Image (tube, rainbow, N blue to C red):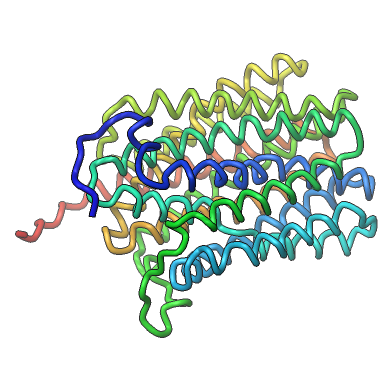
Length: 402
């Protein structure tokens, strides 16, 4: 057991035994997920000529996030070294097949299959951080480093995808995601922490776990609404760039949103987290709704980029607050799994939003699409605010003595 140390900087986190050996290849693998949304949208749109089909394909990949808790439990039970590489190989093969397919139905099926096989790199890395920081006071800083890097990847990923789309056929971006996903996963899964196994009771694989809690379920409904609203924005960004005759600019626009998200996350981390997570979540969802309303009226790509950058400052804090709320609602024993369900709800909402936005963007244009996303976020903000007020009106139960 490593000795306890005080909370240090990110250098102290990366100086832990095997931390860099695990984290660096994981960054490469997770970069693939930053490139993938635009890679799917433009590959399918160029192959079929339809944004509706592209939205359905993106939705097919995203909806498979419902399998994330099961894949994470398998990795914890049998070891990441045994579970992650086969998943990454199957996903990479499916994405490679999708790069040469032209039939709309086959594309949707193959990309959905890729989603079923997509390795849970984020949850697996956070599980590794828990083990790497055991016996130290560095876990909060490690989670902070992980969150900032993840947001940065969603800044870099769209830029890379946009450059590849602008330079040639979009399927090249899809092939790059397959390569990064496979090599990054193999590098992470061959590090010593990946060989750890968590004992599990028989029948635990499909146990609902923290979903038994009404509070957790309510939180996940809110996160689903946020995921749907923001996903509509991503699809409309691509459609806007295409309508202006500059499809490669979609990467720059998404990068502007991600840059705002990174800045917002860094600023949010400097404040005291507080305990009123639902109130914070409602306020941040309201900021996102206002931003997408402004985006619907942006007269050009430059203005849209500025609006998206400002809007993005609320994006990372939304998920920081959601993970903190999940920890509080689920308790220590189920906090990690509750956090995984936050990922599931986000991706499920994103899938629904992508499918909806593809239809709206094709039939009515990206402006109404942005407004649709804003409406979803506004309804979510109102529902969460109402729930937060109702919960605050109840007397707080007495805390048991320890």
